[in-house]
Length: 307
Image (cartoon, rainbow, N blue to C red):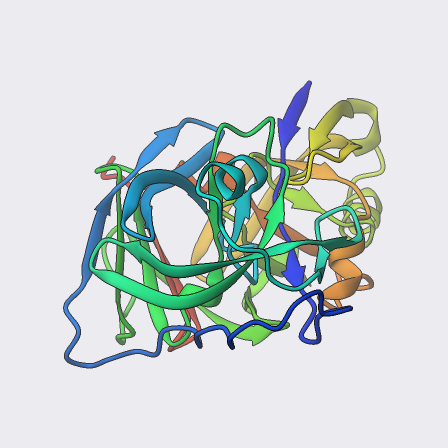
């Protein structure tokens, strides 16, 4: 069984500047007068959500939307085909480990009606992903990202207050290492952390979560399935998949949730190594009609199809 997983972060201080470059543009701030941006997306079930992106007025190019990535990046093939000028060497933390990677400078990057200028983007191989780049959460400071899986659309809007209602559950979260971590989550009354990772094909768990599951159900290890996965940088790693009997996210209870367990360095980077943690991947997110991740109000909304 094989799959793909993406989650990475760029170090705040880049290593070994190779050439002087203009400063990267800051992440988009929420503008109360800016209209929502809605983009038609392509979704390969249990694979990835991609959006059309323009680079220096050319494209569109296929960028994967990844809420598990702190910074946007481009593929080696896109950097070469568009002859993007080289920037500094950056330290990039992929889901597997820390790597030095080259970067390129993009004069203008557009998604829908939103633009950023003077973007410094790390360059990664991405050979096995059939994408041209990754859109990370550096685009979403103070804003709200809405995945409409039922309608195959992606919407970027200003942050707004929402309440739970019929077929809709709003779960509180908090910012941790740049990510939104759901705070009201547990398994059989034991608190856990949960993150939204739209870049991972499978939901992923750390060793602390697996130990918790095996304490609750000592027979769980009897149903393990070996899984081989590939990071965005082409790095291969292995995990073991088993099903969580129940998980509660706020007022939402999910049963028989498949999770791949592997103790990746990214958990330590996010200071979640010792905390039972699940990264909710696209396999689970697509079971909802809509998932809205609000970085301004630190909340996640799950919409459930009418029965």
